[in-house]
Structures are given as C-alpha cells and as structure tokens.
Image (tube, rainbow, N blue to C red; front, side, top):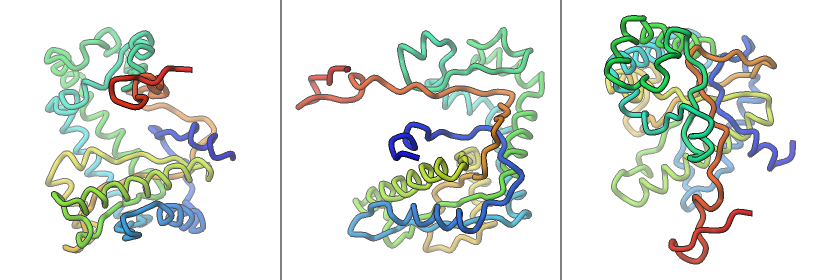
Length: 261
C-alpha cells in the first residue's frame, strides 16, 4: 500500500475483530514500527506489554465493561464528551470535527439531540442502556485477540519537566507508527479508554500487568484482524471528516489563515 494511502485509510475500529490470533510476526512488526519513532536524544522512553493471555484479557475486559457502565449511568461520559457530538451531516460539514452520532437503538432515536440532557439520562437508565453498553464494551475487549499496554520509563517521563513532555510526544509518535502499521497488516486498533477514567480500575489494570514502580502505565489498546464485513455497535458514530486547511493552518503568522485549494 502506498504510504499516503495508509495515512488516509487510518481509522479506529469500533466493532469486533476476527476470532484469529495476531501472528507473532505481525506483533513484532508493530513493535519495530514503534521503535522507529523519533524520541528526544534517541531516549526511546516507551515500553509495551503484548497481552495474549486469555485470563488477563478477560480481567481487563471486565474493568472496561464496568467502567463504561458506570460512566454512562452517572452521566460523566456525556458530560465530558458532549462538545464532540454532532447530530447532523450539516453540522458535521460546518464543523468538520468531532463524531457524527448516526446509529442509536430504536427507543433512543427520537431523543438523539437530547441524549446528553438530564431527562434523557434518566431514560437511558430506565432502558438499561448503561448495562447494555458496558456489556458490549466488555465483549469487544474480551474478544480482541491482542491487547497492548503502552508505558513510559519514569527516568525519562518526569511530569512538570520538559523530559515529561518529550516522553509523551515520543510515545504518541510511536503509537501512531503502530496505528499506521495496522492498516498495512489488515488489522484494526482501538483505545480502551474507560478504565483510565475510573482511578481504581486503572490501578487494578496496573496490578494485573504487574507494572513496576519505575514504569508509568499510559494507555491500553485492543487489536486484531478486521473482518471484511464490519458489524457496527448499537451506539455508533462516524468521524471521517477533517477540518479544511484554512481551519487549522496559518501563513507566516497566526493572523493569516492559509487559503483552501
């Protein structure tokens, strides 16, 4: 695949992966891609844990499901991410960022635009939506043949210092290398974010992975091979739009937006 085509095809996989182990060859290619990312003075502060063990994957999946259920039920999910929700193509065309909520369970469709309101939250609870979404999230994680934990070496990662910024920057570039490589390998990847938002859940993942004091757990991802037909989750969205160049690029100073072609 041509390099620019890989960049343009990079996506997040919201649905399930094939029930097929990720080959050791492909796992190592992903890790090599990560290692090729730039880092401050070639410090390479990143560390990774490849998680294939079924028991560990299921433990992390339980935490992913329970944290999703709690965040939805308490309204924290919608409160935190409401600024990114779009509810029409017109809004998406104008803003060209965020996510277009285009799939909801039947009972919720009449309430699409009110989905984040206190009244809609009560309806979500009454319909058991938090539990359903939590279970969906658990199944997605448990059914992923490979989980990947990303960590930073604390000798380099020192929050509040420039080295902390450089370390996060380097890890971000390493993960983007991994993400792009999944496109080439016919794989998908998704951020397992909800446990990060519940401190006790995040601590439990650290315990499961036996993270030592000298490392900081930064993120967890789920990976696998993508099926040809991609079933969509019950609540799903599109995020294909990108801002026009005039919306995020300037010429010579921040006062002059770059012109669109």
